Image (tube, rainbow, N blue to C red):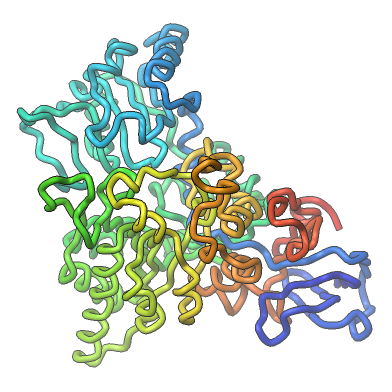
Length: 557
């Protein structure tokens, strides 16, 4: 039976009809959007009594696999004191003997705790030496391991780094690994360790393991998502089962990772196999994923200027592919009609990305090939002002994780870039003003931070530039506001970035992202008027009813 919602404050994300006060839907399709006076009456009429309705939220970069796989990780107390951290690790290892916990995986230690030389294995050995032990840094791209773990993975001075300078083991003056690892390099060697200890982590995803993640999305109005990267076919099998059981209330865009041009053809074939096997109404696969550089806080993002803390003036950070190879990757993606989602953080990575897109588009034109690939640049934390207008000219989508907009990663990047360049980070209004497509997401990777995927929490941080959980020092930054004020994102930009723009990134805008007749009935009835609630209370907005495919899947009408 048709449901007719009247007397609401309905924000549609539709440019041609931004607001309405009535909406109707039947089965999974919207049948009417407009005024209450002209709304149909042949169905169940529900008076919203002035409550606000918004389209279903789209998180266009989140990691269901990594979050689900992290449920066995051990949460560290938040501290800047290494001894306090080691006391916790030592105590935990004593309480949970090797037979019970053969591998200890802790998260997070503060990235600033050990400086640019990083932590040493001997220090972690002082807390745990009888079994492999790992601590993950707050930025999630650095790992501190003990000697036993290096031994079991057979890492020595003679072990070549997969990507020197980026995906690597940090080494001392004699070439021996120090125990500090960058860009998940240890995962390349983890199987040797697991084989030797006769144990594997509980990371093979089952519907039960993933159910809590999707329940969180449903409770927080997220009805569509792009996966940061697929963590193996077992993830897709589990999701398919959840979907059939009605427990995965999202439209899903699966993204497959590759490392270089050499493995790209194989990984595209794998993506297309996923599409053939798992594709359907709710699941699609059309995008590849590349990590181009590292992070600003760890000093391995690609910078246009040498690092301030490098006396030689030769350290510009690291980049995985040069312009020519990246352009080749883009051309191949274009020929295969798939999109390319690129992790990039530094301003040099952004420029290389733009240059590669421009080069690939020119070559496609020369060859008479239509350009169909959508390049998606994720993060883009530092963009040189000279490059602000390039995304709109080149058809590049920029994806930003809103809850990073305040003090989440603190001031660590200042060590490498200085204050002036640090202040230029996280500025997207000039790109938006140019007309480029900018989308929003959470990019959460562990259960530790899953609560921050609440879209209203993220929107509050991006709108205020204040992180309620990790505020900047108010003595240095009045009100703990991350400068500059001009980088605050408006409420309308945020809602559109989380709805219609996200649908465009996922190539689902004909079905999702706005409340229009004929589109899928995905929408949220929320507790407060998003445009009028005080800025520091946006995160308190709750979801009174979440509607997916025309069914109320959380709350009630």
